[in-house]
Image (cartoon, rainbow, N blue to C red; front, top):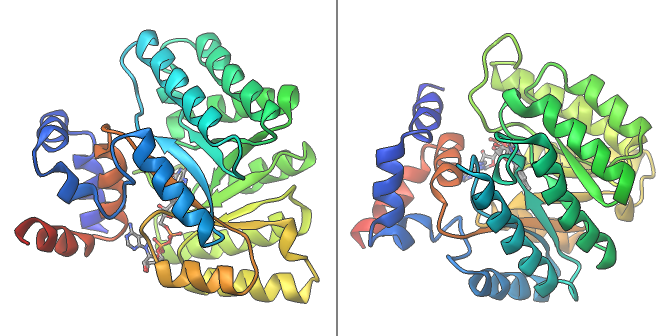
Length: 301
Ligand code: FDA
């Protein structure tokens, strides 16, 4: 727990970020979790995964941009990615702070609209990641607006937030698909459950609500026990495999990924690419500090 807070604290450290992202060793740091620096690198990974019957959602790394010009550049990078994956059953995942939310909700909404228009044309989806609780209300408001206008948005709900059961009921009533994850940010105890076992228990409760009443939910976890619980619950309630999907992060629990696909369930991997990898990478270390050992091994190899 202390290490989790430590890595999440470091995820905001600008000098360390600059040093790591510009280091000649950067590829060695990121290789396990990031598909590469360019869209071509990411497309290579997406196509290889498709051959293994694994779908993908592309994340052009970047968050908390520092100007609306940067936000527009992110939107354009995503539009290009979207047009290059149009022939595949792939989606894109975005963070609203990368689309300008810190500067103007209106400009952010316009940027997301451009992408949602593309998703509708390509019969795809825009998955709107959930960031820290400072953004939850604004993110859900924009997600609901986009879903209402384009019917191709997926919301993300974090099981560690105490408010999530109510948010899921609302999204279910609006027939907005939800990706359920545990939550990756450092949150105060007023808004989030602190104990892992409480978060895990809440995840299972929310997952069952989504499987029963959700519109094509995504069960996003690498937790083997929870994935097993999803299999059992779906079988028990006769929920067909095409009514939901599993999602996981690129590079994590490949054994479990293969098992899910072999059992005939749909799996979508979250595939990040780009040069602004530092905050994403630090959150992956926070989730599993033992990853530092792999990292060190790579560095010294
Ligand atoms: P948990 O952390 O309990 O891990 C269960 C097991 O999975 C571990 O024992 C280990 O084996 C493996 N594992 C988990 N993390 C690992 C890691 N980093 N390295 C190696 N092994 C690891 N969060 C958020 O706040 N907003 C969001 O929008 C998203 N989006 C998102 C999309 C997708 C597709 C996924 C899978 C996850 C997210 N997340 C997220 C991240 C999520 O909130 C959470 O931090 C991670 O998924 C880790 O939690 P688990 O559910 O895997 O469980």
